[in-house]
Image 1 (cartoon, rainbow, N blue to C red):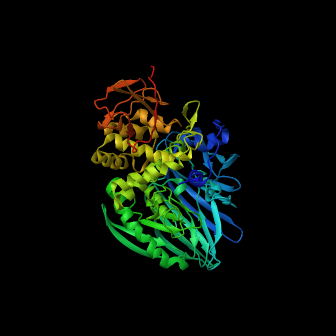
Image 2: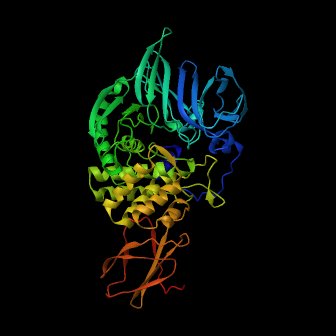
Image 3: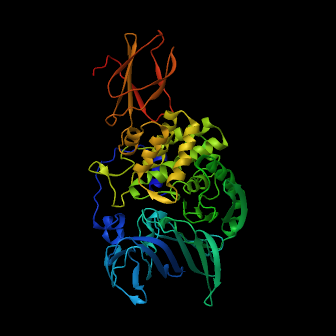
Length: 560
């Protein structure tokens, strides 16, 4: 979940807005350094991060080091390490030797003494310090939230940096397409704070200076932006669940004052996990467990340590995003952010431009949960109701001159949430085969799990498994802002119909109900087609609302 969701949610309750200018974003060298796999990145593969950070709430500063173990893909002497201003690198060491480096925006270019051989595994250690950019208006404005527990007055600290990138608070190869195979996260905080990070707690070290180091270990591949610090005066309770891969451990870390509320609210975790396992496949991180951690910000999909800040309310902090009432029957953050364990954390986009893989499926998972706990009809009603938050002004997938904006850390529009979810619901309706649909969703997890992938690969996989060419549907809903318009007219004993405002070759079938003739599936194209009407009452038509399209009665006789 990222800053676009805040914008999308605000639009739901805001007054109508004037049309936004269709300005093409401009990207500079800093964007390319952040989002591209340039020559100082492409030659090495991150294998393991050994992150050690001391957090100082007294002055909102941090200091520490990260050991970057990497595999050499091809020889090179220049290495890019990312760390965002105002943080400063103090030194970079390899084989006990200090290395020279230069700064270019938020990237540091390190000169190695010699080019390592392909296949070698090396470690470089980066020492750094500073005051990370704080969150001001929203969590995603900065790397750190420096807050206070209102009950005890104790510091309450959390990181949240999806979109900004992990380098906003720790040095790494900040590229979506390169995840380490595993990671240590050792965070030192003042007593009596407890730090909760990703994975399993391996060690707790009481230091002589009134601090404690909490050493966590993630034994699975992890997105850099998912690595988290959560420090507060936490309570802790645990549970287990028998899942598809055996016993899954569940751990919950609310603030001490909210323990009773958490015990009530977090009972939603088990039915959610069972639902998503049924539809998407086994929870991806049995080895690292499932955790929820209360945070001062709304929430985020931190792998195996979901950030929770929904105030123990149903819905989205007490609001129903669908307007149906169905969204007030469950806790939005518990459901949406945990869906990202499958969609985003397990199946991950290799470039930020393809974040629809994370957010469209994550949003659609909300409807799946409603279906699990209520009915299929209720799940459809929820996702259809969410359309009120869609703008249809910018493509979901960002574009530069008609091509996907890869390599510049480009962000798609906020429509990737509700519009992307409705695109998936539309595809399910086109298939009209729930067994196959479930097979596709679980198959994406099996095929693309624990690695990063391009959106095109996911599109092609879904077409292949569906047995239907879905490419024009994806192109229409992801790469263009316009909705398909189904145009029709009755007259002279016939129904004429076609698609308009569509990409070339758009041929999505459409289910309609015609008065006096019942339900039928039409196959419109961009050209007018004709269907004889066999009933004198055939003068009205309804489009199945499970398709996210618009429709218009054109009245008089159409012309090609």
